[in-house]
Length: 144
Image 1 (cartoon, rainbow, N blue to C red):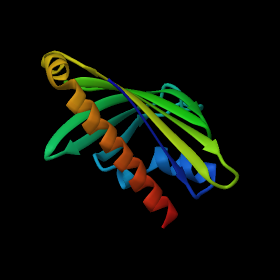
Image 2 (cartoon, rainbow, N blue to C red; image 1 turned 180 degrees about the vertical axis):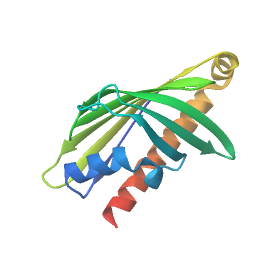
Image 3 (spheres, rainbow, N blue to C red; image 1 turned 30 degrees about the horizontal axis):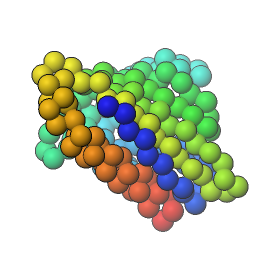
Image 4 (spheres, rainbow, N blue to C red; image 1 turned 90 degrees about the horizontal axis):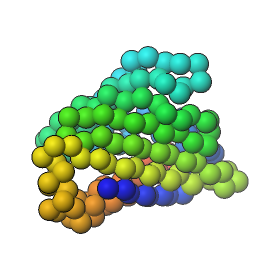
């Protein structure tokens, strides 16, 4: 399942890039912990652990940075028990403002494949709404 969301933020691209990637638990509505495990000089190959909580349900993911090009792009692969997530952020300089685009691809595993098959449309709509709300929260925090 793929989801794409975007928003414009009234802050310079460097600030938006840094805050989006380095302070995720501060703006995300589901990420409660983001721990760097290993770092590489250029970012690519760095590993991390993410803990999410949604509606009282916690999930842990092991992640690796697959692309890192400050201040315009970054992507990660996250592996979890029920599904894997590929998340890609791109940042576009709009002359002092920044457009942030988030693309994510969720790949279900095991029983979750059946769940996605049966209620995929509802899951996708819920996921799209959640991504929009997350970016709106990022904007609210950065612009306050």
